[in-house]
Length: 394
Image 1: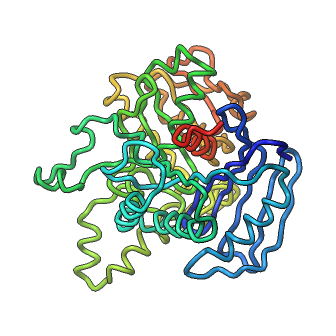
Image 2: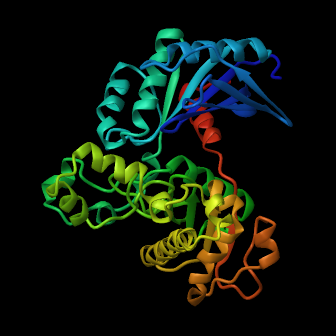
């Protein structure tokens, strides 16, 4: 439990889940003291809490509605009773899309919230959840400062050439461009590299954030120079249920042949990716355990597209000094890492099989021309750190 100082709570929403981080504020820094998760698809709702080595499932009476006031009121009430502190001092939020409006974290006021809401059409799975959480807390705790941290902000260091589509120039100025996502994860990895391998951190690194949502980012000296996701979170490599990069002629064909916009959106976001190719599961763990050829093909395609993207980012970076695997699949599935690196042998990538199976920090083998690392990401820590910085908490 936290003693003495206030607590900052962070919210990292998915399309149907809410990850919660709890941080004690100590001398201007945020120290994690707990984490939680609520799956909004589960009935009745359960708040899963992890505090150090201990975990607990707390049943919630609240029901999911259009607004999340009841769910958050019960959740915040339980947290306030459980953790010994002076009370919540702030809330930080991961907001997927910041468009061209936000270059970094901001304190949320009426104008900021309005701008965040205006970007909902660009991230229809995640942005509405952030808006619901922010507005619920404003009603429940109107005096509580809130800060938004944007996934897109980290990629503002990319050149216009990288961000531009081959469309009429006016469209770029109107906001039709490559934004990139998972920026909070990439920011954490860039900082972690600086701590754990400072010389390598100054080089040319491709980070593979592989989870149910997945993307890659090319870093040079810790700054984003390229990323696989573009205008939306559909772009890039195949994901659990999202298609990844797709010939735009395909959706045009489907629309012309009677598919509605709603059906098309459902197909691309929810019925494609590993699930669509395998016809079995969106979970790569289940596919790796399956003997079905369709499962193997889905995993092979996933790894192949990742390797292709690593190679393309080496062009942007002018070479390749290291690869970092992170997020759920990247951190815990050596089979996927081995498949990806197997396609990159021509670049001089070689794995240490034992280190890879052990999920070690360094998994490149003797003689590898490219460093290969496994680094756990922590988006909530970045959200907390940014909130502390914006609000000057101590």
